[in-house]
Length: 112
Image 1 (cartoon, rainbow, N blue to C red):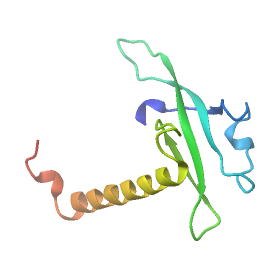
Image 2 (image 1 turned 30 degrees about the horizontal axis):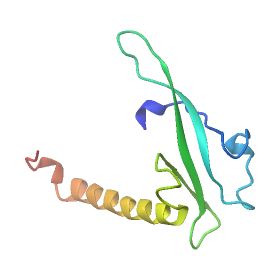
Image 3 (image 1 turned 90 degrees about the vertical axis):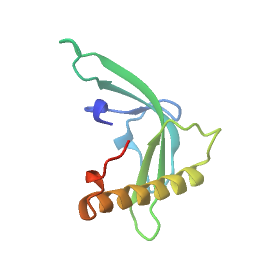
Image 4 (image 1 turned 120 degrees about the vertical axis):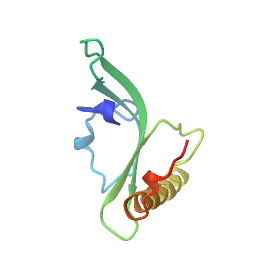
């Protein structure tokens, strides 16, 4: 999110550790995090905002890395595995539109 520059999230539901203190090799957290961020300037003033989101960390298939998903969809509406599948499909759609815009001049078509 462009408005969330400088965000420094802290877990609020699991415990009060910072995200860089977690050992993702041992756990796959699905926790609520709270992030404080600076908003864009408006009429010469800059305010801070606070947002509580859900952080899901999933081990990437076929590699030793992890994928991090930050969303406002609560656990009661979608479990972690389903959320990861939805975001994987969404990423494929983003790549498709990037392809259309860069190689097929989609951004030049008159649309509304």
